[in-house]
Length: 208
Image (tube, rainbow, N blue to C red; front, top):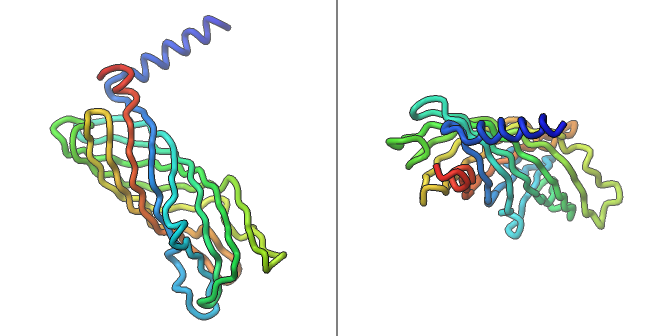
């Protein structure tokens, strides 16, 4: 058993130390709101509110370079979104707190003279997995979180810049493709943006 674990550790270290692979941590700021409802008559809408418009998130990424300028970057982040529910332009005084794990496989094109040096572009889907939800509705004992979907899908497009050799400064636009909330009459999607700092642990640890 010890030999198997040792071989696995050696294989992982050798694999991670390859020039084509990179991994690190993500420290980010998520700005979001409900894009799908114009809060008109007989429409449900969700407002992130001024105080909850931006939320911190934390995660990690793995990246693989498969050509001189192109690669695949997979990001996973943990974040919390808080919404105030409304109907027909009126607030219902219901606050919903949703916890998500977001998985974001991205195509990456690097415009630098070398990969992971300089300006780059990213594009790909994002899958949001709802891990926990709760509601605070003092005026409605029947308020529930049943209509929030366990998974939603968005499309992300972004740009970034490698600075200080081990840090990427990155921004993404997050456009809703499927609803995060859907009842028999309404469907609401998330629109937002991400700003993050990605720290390349692989380069720090192995001095690439």
